[in-house]
Length: 486
Image: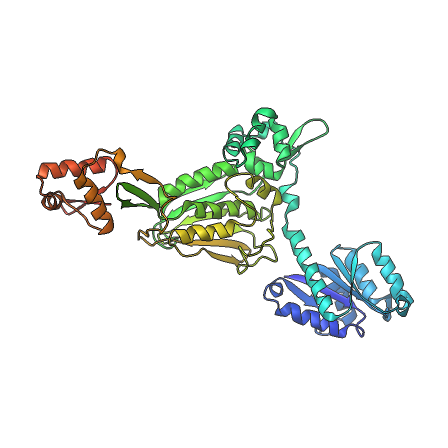
């Protein structure tokens, strides 16, 4: 919890202080983050009240000062308690916000209050208000600004790594970047500019006054040969479990590579550890993956782009179960984002702006702020449930529910990988067999196929073995009997 200390002339602002505390504690999101300290409701039983208030001011994460007409009783060193508390807080931190109540005539304000306003104006900005409702709006805006500042991580993604040079850049990662660019004209930069100038142009580092290039943290994550060298926690742990819990592991892999290499490794791991089904439409076989890879890749890229890289000792986890996929990323959603407004907010908010700017140049991030919507659309198009999102314990989780062993035929098959059976040397029996297997969920043996199409056992064996050779059907067994199925 972040502590907020509200300081003011107690008699003049008793109603406003109670109102702010009450409304913040009613806010479903803010009440989980901020603890409001006010004179009326917070008092110490074991130490003198004045000492308790000063301790609270010194310990607070945020100081909110209210100034009105009256300056208040002199507390210490010729200062009111409000100004003294501000000085105590300001000596330790600088997240202070002042709100001044408007008066009809500025001379109605006590001289000491006018002088106090003049003093704070030299150190910080302030805003005016007339009503307690307007004051609440301003206080909420200040709290939002504070959260965005501490969660933006600009110090991380744009921080230069002074000990890095061009020798730390991995050419393969650079080539992968150019291969996945959306803008063809941008690709020409590879022939027209040197690598250090390209990296500086896209925000991956800077060239200093001596002409030496240095990666920043973003550049290291995308293009460094050895990211561990710069002590950046960036691991992605991929696991395929047997069943719906974490007891039995079938396959696992941990990647410490640069982003584009991680995405390639993810695609291989995903295809290896998920199932692929097929449906037949006339003379075409349409392959339908267990999960739409675009939705899963979107979730992974979002995790890479938005994770909190200041959380040490954690990694992104990509878990495949029998019935679902879970992607868990360190770092909670940035305020004012909530699970309920994901994909609705039209103004994108980024924890790592420089990382998102590079991803946005590639096919992996179409437009800022549209990833959640695309993920939902891909799942719906595949006949699967909408993604589930959880923002708990400083981690963000995406759960994609699978078909649970079933083959769900999407309504729209246009964008799925299609195999034209006319490219194979198949007879009419074999085409009809494939359609029966698909539409009627039929299983054949050598004998049942021969009987249905009134052919010899040897012809049946030749037909089915040819379909196996083309990888159009699968072969299994029940006891000693061979069976064939899609």
